[in-house]
Amino acid sequence: MRVPPVKLYGYFRSSATYRVRIALNLKGIPWEQELVDLRAPKQAQHSAEFRALNPQGLIPVLVDGDHVLSQSLAILEYLEDTHPQPALLPRDPFARAQVRALALHIACDIHPLNNLRVLNYLRAPLGQDDAALNAWYAHWVGLGFAALEQQVQRLSADRQHMYGNLLTLADVCIVPQMYNAQRFNVDVSPYPTLRGICAHLESLPAFARAAPHLQPDAG
Amino acid sequence: MRVPPVKLYGYFRSSATYRVRIALNLKGIPWEQELVDLRAPKQAQHSAEFRALNPQGLIPVLVDGDHVLSQSLAILEYLEDTHPQPALLPRDPFARAQVRALALHIACDIHPLNNLRVLNYLRAPLGQDDAALNAWYAHWVGLGFAALEQQVQRLSADRQHMYGNLLTLADVCIVPQMYNAQRFNVDVSPYPTLRGICAHLESLPAFARAAPHLQPDAG
Image (tube, rainbow over all chains, first blue to last red; front, side):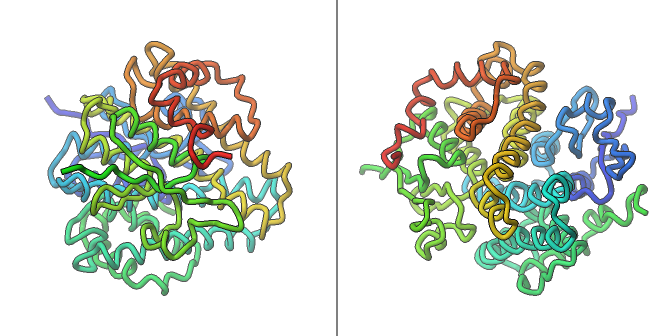
């Protein structure tokens, strides 16, 4: 019996979806995209059909048979638990926690502040203009990347991976965040270690195939 | 040889620190608080001494012997890995992921938007007044709690726990977020299931002892 591939509800530019694409590719799990077009006037994330999958109205959502999962980091941990090889978390509890802390730094303290819904709220009702939105975006990425740069200077062993010389969930999270920062024209020159790590990772097939511009809905 | 207790760098009102206090208490791990006073003019999170522990300048930080860890959810997973009993994650991979998704919903999509540093940025440079800050706070808590309320109506089996009839990391995260919402005078009456769950959890000794007003730095 053929097992149907997992379905990933997402959008090419969503960096949280991009994380999951990378992990699915790294683990060699067959998957299909279900497009959730975030753009106005479509805003498919607010449709009744999508909210039945995720009451939060946020992507990504992974559907694996009867299992419906939201929150990209919970999805990554699920893939790690169900498809342990290749491992994206080290075995040692402290090392695992350090990798998770790097991933959470990005997923909690950088990305959610710069999400579409937040930028929309700044525009209305708060009445902020494009310049203020760009400054807001750059502020939180800058704070986060400055701290991450210090952390990886200590934690990266080869300047090709965020942690040691291992491919981990921290790598899965940094590449989409760097992509997003560059899309918003943030100056990333002060973060040479992060940039070098991302340049290496983007050359790997699993990362390269997950790039936003290669997705079927890109355009 | 006496094992020195773990040190938790935090502040009584920090809801991310509150999460870790609850988990340490639930697992019966002896711990001591190291005060990081976030209030102006002290702002101890920005001191060179504290930034040597966490370049992000955010609490909590857990110090366990030579191990220094930031990011509250990474700390919770570390405690789960190093002190498996009582378990705060179910065994089944999908169930684990659902619990993590609830915890991440709070930790990524509600709390970071309403953190002190974000409210400060809204005040200056964005020039927003108290009314705008309160509306911002209530907006993100409201969005998050409305979705969580729907989720737990489906996932909570006993209306005393977020997931099934189990005490999990989702419970560890909701109580501090509910405390925080009430401190900011958010109307939580539309979320009866969440309120009932929190009322039960707050009656448990491990949660009760972790309450902000009982911490040595409260005042």
